[in-house]
Length: 336
Ligand code: NAD
Ligand code: UD1
Image (tube, rainbow, N blue to C red):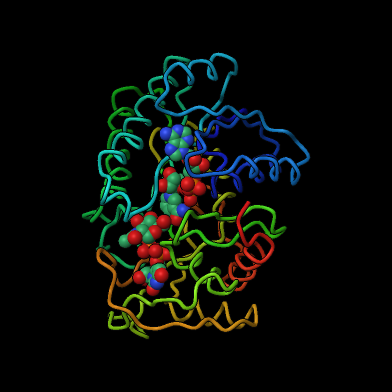
């Protein structure tokens, strides 16, 4: 298939380009580079042996979108573009709603005007809020999102479902990611956070590389086996392959389809730290800090639906995630 990849220069987008190429798909990238470096696309070209057409276009820019959609005929769009920092979204709610929701509305409108009504959307397990069922199935009711970032994901899911209800030509796959970590095993592409990382794994790798003195563990009094938060970490290459698998849903004209992309395994903060130390032979100093506002105790998926319907299942375990996160950071201490 020929696929428009928005946000393709970013962390998950760049890994997905590699897997799409391996599966024989053709891609075109648009990205405004607000949170990425075009070098990621050079690295993707190096890994795949193919140059991917790239347009520095913002998804809020209707003219820019019209140009790209006019020059190419796409079978589907994989839509990663968006702002994703939870804390920043609390400080700048307008910017988050305008970029993520405004941008997606403009993209959807441009797509339908050019006759492309197939989209795979990056949603998040955050839409479950404090989940009513563990492990979380897709039937678990959506919960209260404590921040504007999470709200944009939840609202966009609703918006897309309404659009599909009104126009059955749309096929929309909502992928709810759990916690993507790791990097391409080559160490050539990976996560490149700006400033102080918010998420656990990039913080650990920055401690490992000597950029930060120690990790703060946010709370050890949760109702979990060791008191620290439990999450479903998933290797970004597995996540990327989940997008390739999701194209099958588009091909069989799914209407609306929702899938969790996780491993189904929960690991606590301290278990992840221990796994990282063991695999990479590096000590990660840490101290216990107060709980982080908005955090929940436990969140992990039941990924059976994606396996049943798409034949997709995560292949990598926590060791590979720790190995590849470190391999990326060690080889690229300053990012790209
Ligand atoms: P990322 O920031 O690395 O990638 C997003 C890309 O979108 C960046 O390259 C950025 O420059 C681009 N972008 C942002 N706004 C844009 C706009 N208006 N027009 C064009 N490009 C724009 O983030 P990621 O981790 O690769 O996440 C990809 C998607 O997955 C995001 O929608 C994110 O919310 C979602 N998601 C990520 C996680 C995670 O833990 N990384 C978890 C759940 C969902
Ligand atoms: C966070 C976001 C979520 C987003 C996801 C992926 C919040 C409340 N949620 O999820 O919306 O979809 O990232 O981008 O921010 N931790 C520490 N020390 C740290 C960092 C994290 O102890 O320095 C702990 C957290 O308390 C949590 C676990 O590590 O228990 C994972 O945290 P993180 O990587 O930020 O992911 P989530 O909180 O699950």
